[in-house]
Each structure stands twice: as structure tokens, then as C-alpha cells.
Length: 148
Image 1 (cartoon, rainbow, N blue to C red):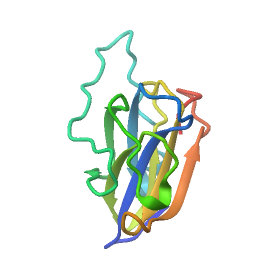
Image 2: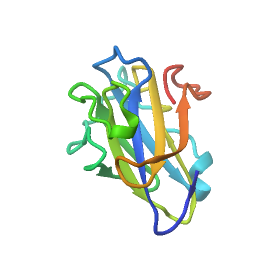
Image 3: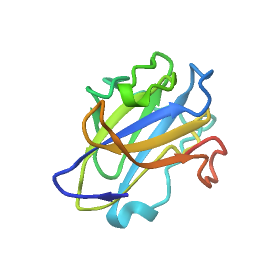
């Protein structure tokens, strides 16, 4: 999506199937020239697992901030279905935000660390009246057929 300067975008990561309540994922953010950069692919067998990020929120109103060219390792294990009224779908989810960098932005869970079927959604606007800008479930991803 186009990340306009002065606009805050909310990124929602959720299981594609509402029955999933545990699992880990890596959320990669690429901006501008970095959009086509290769996705990092940590391997549990040859390297230690990455440390999971702290301070991740499962509410739209308190998203964790991210920046361009970042990778965040997370777990959906303690997430709840706390969507704004306009998104009530019963899925456990986690919320992030990025301030528009004035370039194209890609948010993806395409990473071998991701071990459940994810959907990544991008919104603009205030919680309760969000406008969906982009959504991806099962992007063409060489490292995981479950990633988005």
C-alpha cells in the first residue's frame, strides 16, 4: 500500500481460521526500495529461536509501533478477540502501527518462523471506524505456505 506521510496505518495480524489460538509468526515491514528485499528466514534447527517481542497489543487502540525494514517475532498465544465494533469477527488478533514513510509499504508474515495460517490486514482511520486498505491471506511465499 502507499504509506502517505502524516497518516498512521494499523496492521492487524490474525489467524485465518478462528479456531487457531496458539502459534508464532514473524511480521516483516518493508518500505520503498526495500519492498522487494528478501525475507529473512530463521531456521529453528540450525539457530536458536528468536526472542519474542514484548509489548504486543491485542487491541486496536493500543497498537505496538513498527518501523520500515523491521522484523518482529511474536506469538498469538495470549491474544483475544478484541476488535473494534466494525470488525467483530471473533478472531484473536494483534495490532501494530506504522507512520506513513512517504513510500510504498509491505507487511508480511512470509517467514519460516511463522507456523500457523495468518492473515495480515492494513487499515487507516480511527478504531471503530477503520477503512481496510489491504488484506492478504496466503501470499505466494517460498518459506511457508501458511504465511501472508
